[in-house]
Length: 306
Image (tube, rainbow, N blue to C red; front, side, top):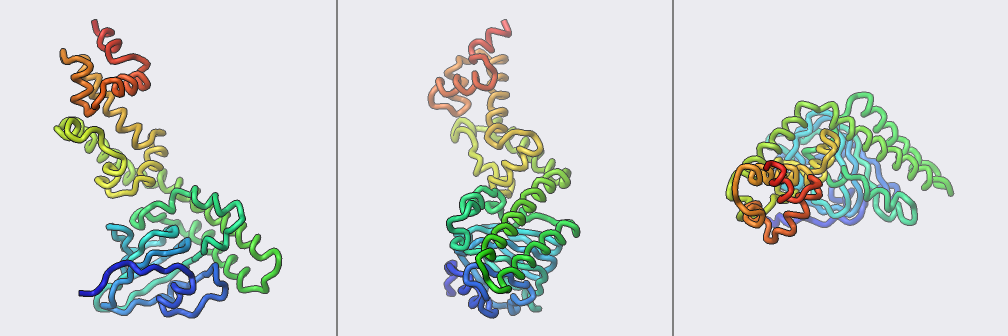
């Protein structure tokens, strides 16, 4: 049985060697045309834990990429982001060579050392998204992104001087800012898909709060909700913030308060009994959350109906 443990690829040079492409001209940054990256039909899948930032702009491919447990077929223009420590699986379909077009930008964290971007880059949430949540680009957006990537390549291929690193950092920061802008645009323009996720979230929470799960397991976690919706927690949070102005946790709490109000107004159960049925070990925690959401204690809310 073949070993399928992920292979650690710490440097950009190691990635070039793994993919059998010419060594990088710069040890800490590389722009690679996807046409150079080929996977023979039936070749063993490559699982790699990367040690660098990876920004991909792909137009077409006949293969699949897998991030975590999720697969994505790249058949449209897309952009995806990966950070050091994430696992990527690359495999070709049977019967024909894998075909790519587009660009891959690799940036080692050491290139950002002692720059403001070294800290700021960790704040871009899309590096935590799964590949199946990749950014879909319009032709105009794609042209902007590809133009910046080509400027980065041109700069490090030119004669290096005291300004080179600063120029590349500036281009990279511009690239990341555009990425963030386009992600926010995607949440707005993909209204049908995103509202379906919102509907599924409401159905999922309703089912949870109307079943024994609440009393047995307490409130559902954000990680559980995101997994059930087949998206990453970061992606779900940003989507909900854009659509509703609230985080996933706030949606969970709103559903809890809705259920609590129902029990307080239609049953004779004590506040402690309701808290227990809603998955709280201590009624004080329930009281505190209820008051923070309604400006009333559970008892005051019940009394308002008398």
